[in-house]
Amino acid sequence: MIWFNKFLESQGCKGAVSSRHECKAVRDDALIWVGEIGVNDYAYILDLPCQVTQLGSLQSIICITGFLQTLLKKGVKNIVVQGLPPTGCLPLAMALAPVDDRDDLGRVKTLNNQS
Image (cartoon, rainbow, N blue to C red; front, top):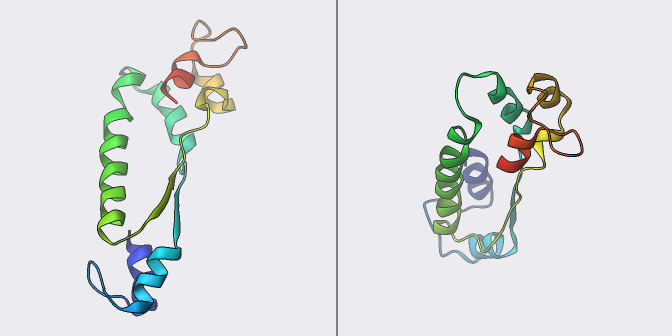
């Protein structure tokens, strides 16, 4: 969010919502893409002593929802939220996962289900 606030300030926009014409034009033309940064981090959860389904899901939803709400409050109109790719296909995930946690193509079933 820091980068977005700096960008708005560089365009002359300050505060939560500015009514200046320039600020409105910046927000109306902006496309914010929320991508899958940290995909490899999901593979590491296989090495922790807890269930895959207990990690990430709720925390990720809360974090991303808060981020999106902040963008909307700032007047952003165009947002794309990209989901995670199938993390059970990552070489690290396949190396760390138990052999019995595979789908019919040999990928890590629990991670792909979570993705």
